[in-house]
Length: 158
Image: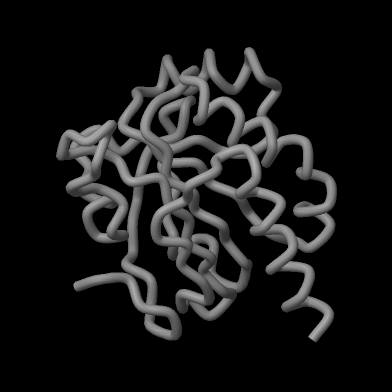
């Protein structure tokens, strides 16, 4: 079932870089940004992560939790987070189960070739567990976090 704005977000439990379980149900009552990215320490993924980092104080001031999700394992996430001083949690989804539920894994066009892989996308889950916004295919990784923050600010001002 595809992700739909206004509907409940699929529940998930994944492990972070330290091996701790992070479950959506434990974040009930908070706004949660879940962004999906293909691989630690690649150009676009690093730009996106660092842009979220650079906006972190403003995102944190809004009380929003940010979770980055990729197929990479705990050790890779630890190195990536340490190398770039990432203040938010990175989660591992090596079998793509969560990504499939969130429409973040499937066919994509890479330089004219159709491949299966992680679809760079973001989901904003509200305090009630419902999807508030779904950015389905993020084209410009470096600029995307600013758009997310703009959307969060507009909602908090409303």
